[in-house]
Image 1 (spheres, protein in one colour):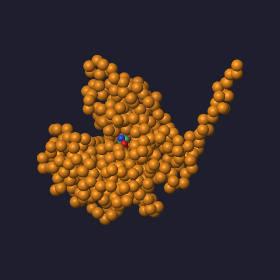
Image 2: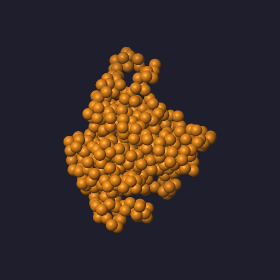
Image 3: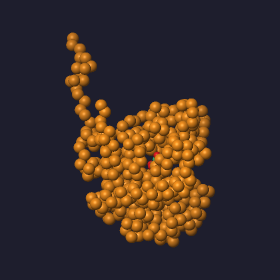
Image 4: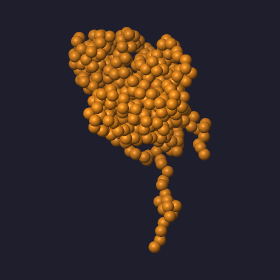
Length: 440
Ligand code: GLU
């Protein structure tokens, strides 16, 4: 009888190195498929080889965890949880924690990759990361959400920390969620560590201006893009899909700056008023009822019809993949400003480009959130807090600088704003990687 040693077996069936074309193949039009296509375009522009492309494409580290939850009725439910660090060449992984029923590993991988390029575009000393739990938070009590958050944090504890991976709110999570993460982490370490999360409440070391930062950044880059075409923001018509942390505040800031918000929507439906919605009154209605639906002085509109409105600016600020091969062709806006992460698929992008719609991409348009997250982390690290005005000024100058960098490259190389933004993000990461060298 002959036996094969482990070494001989390994020699007999060598495992081929990973190439850019390999690895898990995400579904066409999915978030990861879109993210891969965007990276491939940037790699092509930069002329990188397959090895570097693969390094930029593969997530650096991932954890898949089971999150057991004791429900209020005494039963136990086990939820899927993930944390992905896509790249850490420029600094600690940075990115949100999402609670949504459709969360799955490929989506988290895509969102983590977008965080890497986003931090690169706005020149932050961070890599990209993302986490998620497959849960619909609307179906759970505050006590249950606290238990899920604490158990998830405890499960991914080896990956996170103020110097290696810093969480923030994302869809379905908020400042309270971050306070629970911070507390769980701090109790485990034995002392208070505010810099392990950003987007936390002011009372425990949050930053002024963080709550509205994504929306404020979005309006800054919209104004910059319009100014490039000689169009003032004042009087511009805007439609916003999504009325949560990003879309809701964006509507307020657009209105404050004299733009006319003519339609908004949320998961329950949409409303329109061509003369312009009274946004402060709409906010009161949403606070009282939980939805934009039913607001007086408005007519109902579906989410799909909202995307096709004849407006100057369309801001998809809800979920991924809403502008695809079926919907993007009907967009009549001159600018699409992406408040959500990944709202446009590759096919959607091609249709928008064909119809001369200028897309201000997510990694630039919604980067205001992570910019003020960075300010919060810096403040926590030095235990010194800035005023709201200081934060607003620093955010404004970072966003305008990032827009200028992207617009200049786009002009110089005749690229879309998306290709230019991803190229800048990718190049900054690759440069750091190359200067650091490969270990060993
Ligand atoms: N979740 C937000 C995003 O997608 C913010 C991330 C952060 O502040 O770390 O950009």
